[in-house]
Length: 283
Ligand code: ATP
Ligand code: MG
Image 1 (cartoon, helix red, strand yellow):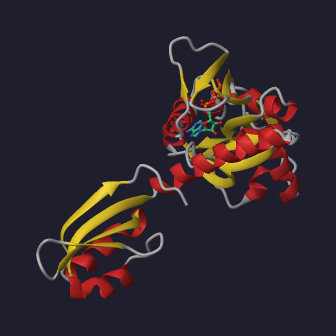
Image 2 (cartoon, helix red, strand yellow):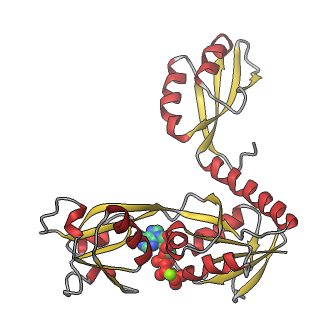
Image 3 (cartoon, helix red, strand yellow):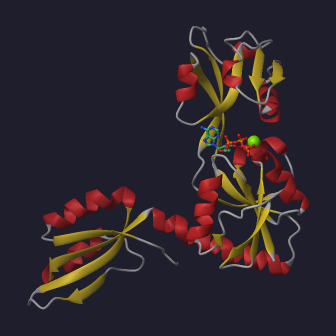
């Protein structure tokens, strides 16, 4: 049986469980302990602090894990990245007090920088040829400059709201991160093929998230023009309508192009356009 480590509580917990659920894998809530047996897939779920997930996966305590790429990069354990998951997006950035006259990374020479990510920061400064003092602190990094503990911070940023409310300004982005599925490098053939099944499910969930199912009525003589506007899975589905000269056209359209395409379809005579959420898309 495959074992996957996910965050016990925190920012990634809900979306990790949600992704498993969408993939048809339910974890019994309520009696959630350190480890739970999932339904719908031969899988055990191990609930850990996110800091401990890379090590657990690299040692094979868990075969798989869902964790931020930032944690993987910081811990440096040997794990395989099976796929990025499209949630938990953030970046690791250097920030300085608003009033600082910042002209570039040279500013950090000889300065004190507080962070919970000393390894990533050390790597960045080494690449830049900068010697700075790195102060590792576990929580509340953002208040370090205000209390005189450091001249700058290196921390997780998503919206930037925390920085603003602490009078800080983001000046360098060092790493972009999102949650990823990671795997132990020494999985046997059985576990590898189970992992592939899981990746297949996650991938179709991700792809369907970015797509909509669109249906519309269209004069038959416009089908060729409409088809040219629709980059479907293969080509759109055309069904005859009871009314002579009209058909119903079904297609899958990427969210990014959705409204532009719909306007152009309307312009060539499409009517009664319905846009539906796509539950799953199996390629
Ligand atoms: P744990 O108790 O498991 O150690 P934690 O407090 O270290 O939890 P969380 O704050 O729950 O961690 O964040 C987990 C992950 O969520 C981060 O490592 C990062 O990958 C991601 N993340 C996305 N946006 C943010 C954000 N704005 N602040 C912090 N983490 C974020
Ligand atoms: Mg943590």
